[in-house]
Length: 388
Image (cartoon, rainbow, N blue to C red; front, side, top):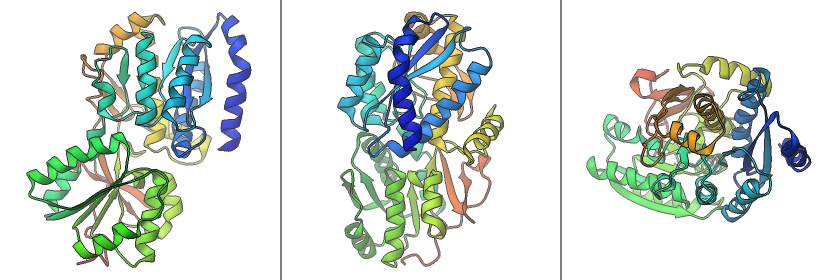
């Protein structure tokens, strides 16, 4: 990863001046988290973008122009992200903009784009608050945050959940998600026995595990990143504690499977994309991704890929890189993507079409266990050895 991101930074620095002179090149700007806590996730996101870039250039480019990316490292920091998008717009004079991954950084980046009346594809910011600020130039291809928890309520009903714990890294997207989960719990008479946030960088979950051992929640739901899901799983094992149902969005990432190993069995991930989805173009995307990167894409990679494929479709439909024409097209454009149906609210640009999935680790791989019409296996719950 370090080699990849180092080459990206060098490419961006060296290429920007020559791009400005090249009439046959279209520049797309992105501030990517090459360092910091989002670097691993951003690496997967970039690979989806990179795959598209090489494919579209092999097909003759975008409106006949070669696609080049100007890439900077936002260091997983919202203030840095804002400064870099200002630079991309005012110094590098990029033609098009794609957001970074992560809601906090995307929130600041989109504010800069809106200020300059520049269209930005929000490919990595799931927080619904990003899209509810009255902005006119920001269009969300990432699934809105509530889509992540689409499957939690059906799970509550199917497994007669009476109590639950919500343990999350403290960031805006998680708080959006918590609101939805609390509404689901209230509606289904599920008691919230633990509702707690932990700061970025926390790697010790012993206190939460101790409280869960006392309260014995039927369902443990966590929101955060794969490294946190990995640490939770390791500490469950080390403390000889097993939740009846353990759900974490990080479980849906390949990093989790590799690091957690056999301890991952039975864990459930909140996912927005799986390689097994029967969506238009997905089989080809998976085939090409695996051939290049030697593993199957997860939803961070699909986020990146969908962002640029939607952008490509909008540019083609507009027949131009003109920002007002693109804004007009993106306001009402609907299309199939590898994640599902792309559609935004015309007033807010918020994603409406993508639906969440629940996946469970079974025999070392992710199986879709919800929704019913897309499942590839039955869920195996509660987990063996769970606290009673």
